[in-house]
Length: 115
Length: 108
Image (cartoon, rainbow over all chains, first blue to last red; front, side, top):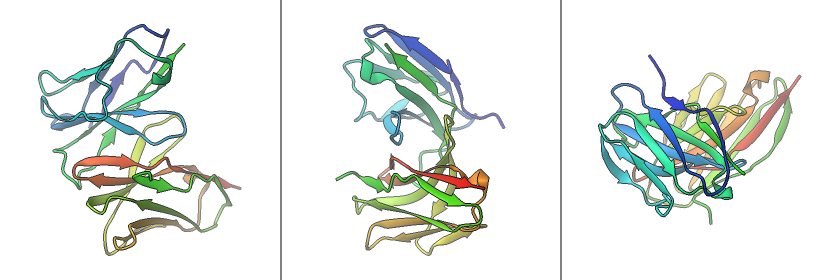
């Protein structure tokens, strides 16, 4: 079974530039998550989708971050404009239906460096 | 107070040692509990779920104490391949909250 796919794997940009990340979840998984993991910290949830609807985006900095999952399958996360503190690994994860006992499967992440 | 707190370590242990990690959580509404493992520059992967009665998977034993809001992970007979960061994860009404992780290095 194919895992969660993410691209690009690495991205280096200058502050105030824009960047977009793509995620394709495991086939059949209704729930998709985007996390931000800063070096030395655990992943922090940015946004959770159930099919193409947003379940939780309370920790998404909406002035600069946006995400969509238009057809309920793959998703994009955008940062515009980027700040130095956005340097982190952006992890996408998916689970079958978002239940409390569901296992979340993570993609390899996109490592973002903002200069 | 952080929602999920872990001793950051690092724990440096010899092969064959037994090592225990602790984790506390602040929200009594937490529904489910997990340990994830994260290798250096890799994504987190589920190690095991944690059940109220405690559960064991080979050399790994997880315990949950809801009254004290405390979770533990015990690793027996440590292997070199156990070297990783261990993340305590708490599901709070559908949201997964991760601890910062405890780093383990197993040495020959």
